[in-house]
Picture (tube, helix red, strand yellow):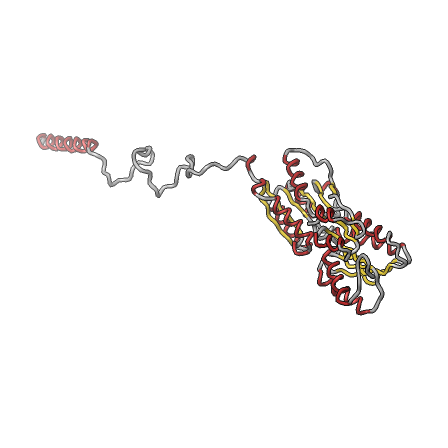
Length: 361
């Protein structure tokens, strides 16, 4: 019995020794690696695993420093087809606010104030650095101006003013439209007519230009018994509409001796209606023709005596706006809040070729 017990004990010891000896065998390569151990850096990374977020994702160049970034501007202007003035104004803005000059610009042209306002609002939401406005209407911009101020977008007006507190915009580079109107009306009064029967063709109603050029004439007609409106209608800056308005007065048989058109295109339309009817106009004609803006061809009409007067409205404001932005970027406030472009009136009796060459666009 003892022999049997000893034999059993011996077998158990042999089996235990065999089990302990298993630790000397190589690991089974079919088993997964211990994830607690670092990966062998000599082996290629498993492309199915996410990259280590502490390492750069790729070898792209770092972004340029803020000081080298383009200045972003949103430019809201009127339709360049509106007039020669507007074409020149729009071209000057596009030629100035380019990447070569340090700007990333978005341009929008529309004579509809509601569309302008909606687009300006989007530009503010897009966080442009500067919003440059030539508003189709002087009112309705309060929300845009407040949102721009809250967003840190600086507003600069050009060409036309707004009805807004000066604190709501950084600067304005504009024409003095009431002064343009007064200069024109004063010149007309100096002609000494016994009676003024006026076809008044207005621009886009509610615009700064229309309000200024209309206001002075309205005041004079209201104050003088011998100043009368034969008609007062808007052609919305359109030449063909101005021609139609003038033709309707001719057809009515009402006497008139003055056409006061609030831009040169409308004056040209009115003159075309007179020509078709055989009515003389200009320096030695029966009807005085007056226009506004800076078109070289219109200067030439005055120089030739076919028109009597043109009120200069200077469209070249982009360089001044650019200078203001450069100052603001350097931390300098504009020297003036409102900067009026230099302008004057020209008439057929005094206009020279040198004036045409200097001021015509």
